Length: 414
Image 1 (cartoon, rainbow, N blue to C red):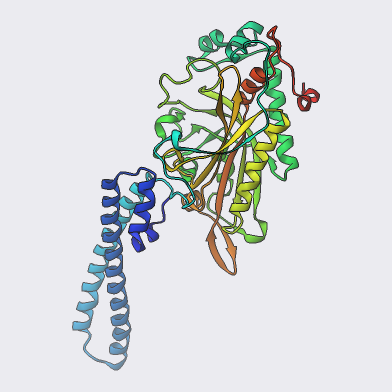
Image 2: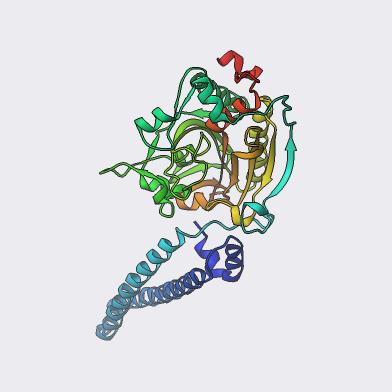
């Protein structure tokens, strides 16, 4: 959540950064008015409280010395009434302010390039070489149908559109990739977790999915539970409302989960194949760090995902997202995009973000240092989206007869 105290202290700086992320100027103006009104009311309430406390001390002295307390008692009663009224006003204002603030995105880092959308993202580096073919490479859905391993018709029959059933070698490859990714991350220092695939509303609010993205979540009817859209939700909130010791940090976590998304805003996009599904597998990295550690850990997470792709022999590029393409909770993000020869373009396969203290403020994740409680920094990243990695292997390792070779590092998992 955006820092309300910073908003009250330095509104112009906060507003300038949020405008870079496309936040509506009218919303910012309303936020400013509400924040300053709440600040003024709280200050008045504190002044009244201080005056009441001072007179209460005087009241004790008057009684002890046998002085007339009637007038003083009347003043104290008046201040009590005024204080109660101000407390009610402040509570309403601050609740309204928090409700609006929960829908305001994180501030982008100063280093994030300005831009309107994905077309303004900056390619940092291309890693590896694109494969060369002596034939016209096919797209993964044609390969899957040719080999009988991707069943789009039965997936829809079982559920609805954007669901796919995998069989045979594709199903085995999906499982092999999950195991390989978890082992790879574990060797890089990430502790493996197995977490619930459902989360309550408080948990989803902690990482920023609620209230803003409720329409993209699958809600369990009659329960305060949702199917998780990413393991980031579960892993980060393991430490919801906890105070950690600074010496414990950084915490590096990894987990496999299925992910469930309605893809509410993706009508007409990637309607064929496995790129954009309502249910997909993902191995996630999450880090909880001190404020001084997060930049170094961010680089470590980018390197981990990039090295994983390289170990699979997949050409990819690192892309710095601009302000217009930056996610709601992110202060800075680097995407990894893998080369898909069947489609003839790079497609996102991992997104690694530093959210600074944005999620920690919402989820109340703190650490103690020099007897002070400090908001932690939280980071998250895909390592990797399993279905998209399956797609990349199918398209990059395809043979002219439609068969698919298996990357060397996966053979022991198959």
